[in-house]
Image (tube, rainbow, N blue to C red; front, side, top):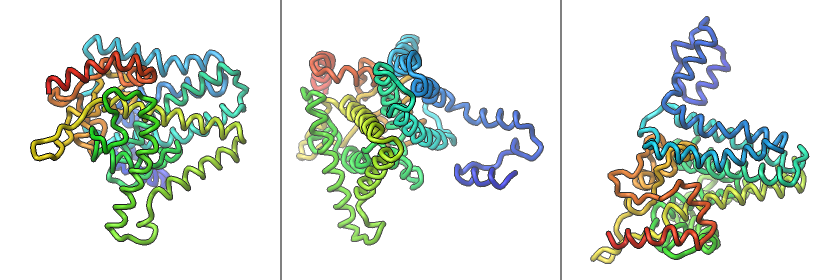
Length: 383
């Protein structure tokens, strides 16, 4: 085995396999490697399938831009509906040694695609107005649904390398503060008025977004400052990570400006806004109208499965690394994404449509309230 192969194994934490013995045909090694991916192949294929369309859209535009956008919208919806009507719920919870490798693969792909998208949208490939718009929306949807979901999982990992990878994905989308706000604020105060990312019944998405974005920014900073104050830490380890978020964001913006000019910087900022919008939509949809009750003692009940909306739609679940199995994630924040269960014990309320579809509906508050408010009312009546 070469020194290079040994180095790669050291990075990904893989053990040497018998199939890698010197003299073993390359095809057999590849077959053995593909076999190791068997449990996670549905996730691998769902997350990577849009990538060729995205690359063709950025390079050539035209029909390829339309196909990329169609894949991220209509095709995703159609596959979800077909599988759901056939009773398919997605893979059963599993343990897999390849989960972190897929997350690292998707993180690396995120940075490469972000540079490619900004390059293409800066005018380098001569996209026309309609091709530019379709390409922008398609890339933004992949960053919002795949990159966001992957980064969300990584910031919950205890391995510092995985955690930092997720943090830098968020920083590259100018949303680094979510690394702190999500873990320290949202998970602690979910379904209460103290959580900026929980939407109250009757609150429209646009009002929620205007409140939640700055609210989470400030709340996350205060929690980080408090943690460092109580630890009395000094030096770099005691530095508030918001410094890293700010410097990192400025660095990415400067890089895009240097490489792709002002048109590239504008495209980058718009892509980041698109991805951030989808993350806010996800929080809005997955906790809308759900509140923790006050106990006779005056304290709030513990956060439970009933305080998150789940979505039992299989293909979007694969694309988003089981992010729609949100109730189990809140019950077990450290549980790796392949092990998440859909609506454990049936206690989590279910969304009527897939998470991407519900996020689209949320953009039109009157329609959202017609769909969701009666469901929230029934839950409260049954509680």
